[in-house]
Image (cartoon, rainbow, N blue to C red; front, side, top):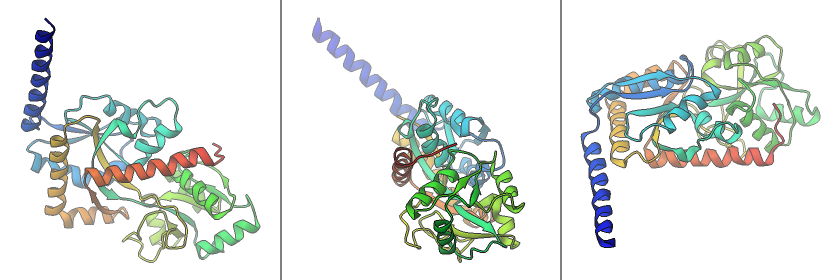
Length: 322
């Protein structure tokens, strides 16, 4: 009797494996949905140049939908709980995938709840001051800050967001103390800096781009691994001798346990779209101060894991306030 149950179990398991393999072979047979866990106007702009072209190589439309809230946590939660069949993905940055689950106790998913598919673009983060500020370089700012603890007020798009955490991680490494005055969004943060209400901002590049180009804001350093093509004259923190590095990669992820064949099929569609429409995508991203940063599933996973270490250490080692 036991042997019959054993062989019956084997048969069921084999059937499930066969069904999964068949589904992977047929993928896709319907449109693929990429959930953007923010309101239109930021993250979607970083991903749209790729997503709009990927359907050509998948044989089915790839569509963006929006599910904003909780710093990206609501949309990401929905995708994490979705069927791992490749038809529901999330398109986002490290903010909602790494930072939100570390700092928001209400969020139940983690980075491990996803199968990273591809990093597509790099937007970048930087420290900015007014063009009229006395600090011409990062070293000037650090020297002043050491002599005047908490004298510099700086703003970000919100407490416990990526830009806030990066500023605090750097301040800790540099041995300086600043006063954080968060705003509700990157636009208001840049407005506060332009209006002279704060001395500095830690910001994503795109909201500050026009003001940097017209000379009203001065970037001191960027948080990425390498200099951004949009700002070849602006050094990275790493170049200046600091350890911190947090490139702002925007990519797409599937729910955990999505078959590798399906993950690869989606990645290949992004890769082929990037190759065929490289000039057009490059131009679209350049208007945002961004650039192509195509990474496959393994490399993208490695990047997300490195970010998880960075921000987990920040939570454990820094005294962070709202």
